[in-house]
Amino acid sequence: MAPGRNRGWLLRLVIAFSFAQAAVSMARPAVSYRALALGADERAVGVIAGVYALLPLFAAVPLGRRTDHGRCAPLLPAGVILISGGCALSGLAGSLWTMALWSGVMGLGHLSFVIGAQSLVARQSAPHEQDRNFGHFTIGASLGQLIGPVAAGALIGGHDMAGTSALALIAAGGGAAVAFTSLWRIEDRRTTPGSRIGHGDRVPVHRILRTRGVPAGMLISLSVLSATDVLTAYLPVVGEHRGIAPSMVGLLLSLRAAATIACRLVLTPLLRLLSRPALLTVTCLLAAVLCAAVAVPVPVWALAVVMALLGFCLGVGQPLSMTTVVQAAPDGARSTALALRLTGNRLGQVAAPATAGLVAGVAGVAAPFVMLGALLLASAGVALRSPSKPPASDPDADSGHSDRARAKARRGG
Image 1: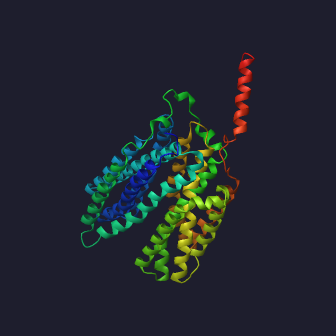
Image 2: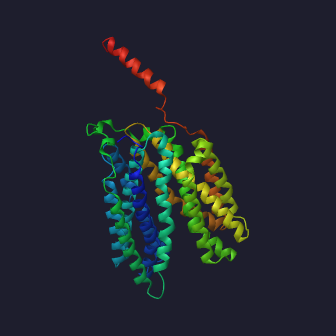
Image 3: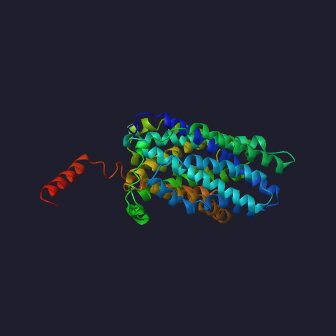
């Protein structure tokens, strides 16, 4: 099967990712509520949440290396097992340190699944299909982020916070396990690199990071994810200051997620109108302005319009940054490059909320959104300079290289 001919595997991957992401999105707030019920203070909750993001950082590059020189598919069920086990065991944990441990296991499982899934999309998609397929793949993440918090909110509450949060975590573990049903025969083994590739052929990390396009893709991805995380964390604070009800804040966040899904459904027509660098530049610029607009006191209906437009613009960054990184990375190091991109994402997940908290403490609750605007503005600048095609995509250059090799062979080497 040539890459790009049969897309049944992509649909199954989106379904599996939806369940896995929904479980994580359901479990993360449930972990915080359960930790509070077990006597944690705000600092302990922050540590437990940080372990989720920090622990997998040490595994990202080794997992990417392994995937570059082997199959992607084994990482998918392994990730589901770790997510499911981490969720369920967090619900059964009786102490804060065990909750931190299982939170880290959950984060490792999510990282394993995402590295395997992204590498699978890169490997089994023809180059001209990668933007579209990455866009469809990330719909799974958006669906999970839309459903998970709603499901958690429906289960958690009442006087027995410890019991209801434990129930939500166990339910999240069961939901993650459903992803197994979509993982059968998902990888075409003929697209897997041969086992003849040895450890000596590994591309050094510093060379990957210095490749044109890779740093740009990493910065764009980090900026978009940081904006999403800070919006989720600080929009309730903005709502509290402006007298917006929590139910309305929840609707505004759901509107952002729905707009992101809509964006990814129409990504292919958008790419017919604009090149990838131009589309990334325009959407990052608009997102920068819209983030700053969140800081302006406006009526709720205007804030809803801002959130919908912002969700649409932020929806472009993740899938197109994946293609940017994959097509820019050296051969034999694409999964490692994707893993480095995820490492940057996780660092952003740790640093952005912490920085936003410091900025908000000094300059007020609106300041983090201005900070995000500046970060997205910088991303627009690097997006404008990112390559629109893979460096090796020039057929004339490839044929010229082959002609020189044949001529050298005829001369006796």
